[in-house]
Amino acid sequence: MIKKIFDNMNMDGFALRKENLKLLLIGLAIVIIGFLLMTGGKSSDPKIYNPEIYSFRRIQLAPMVVLFGFLFEIYAIMKKPKTEK
Image (tube, rainbow, N blue to C red; front, side, top):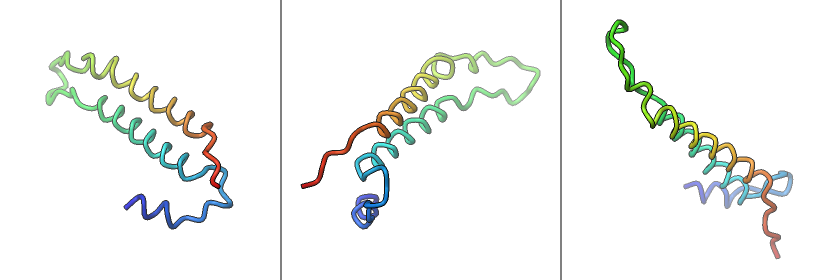
């Protein structure tokens, strides 16, 4: 489906080419996955402490995934596309 969308686009007026846009979508997906990893750990009763909110996944893994996603986005923008012959 996405391949059809990219194939039908006229990319002459854009600063980024098809390859860059595909990489941007991948980076966006990585950032969304990172934010999804941060969710959860809520207690049904606010008076009860739930130590799950400070788990490795939420405190260390998810922020690293989000940071990697943003760095990947920068790479996707800066990458010089291959010249079409």
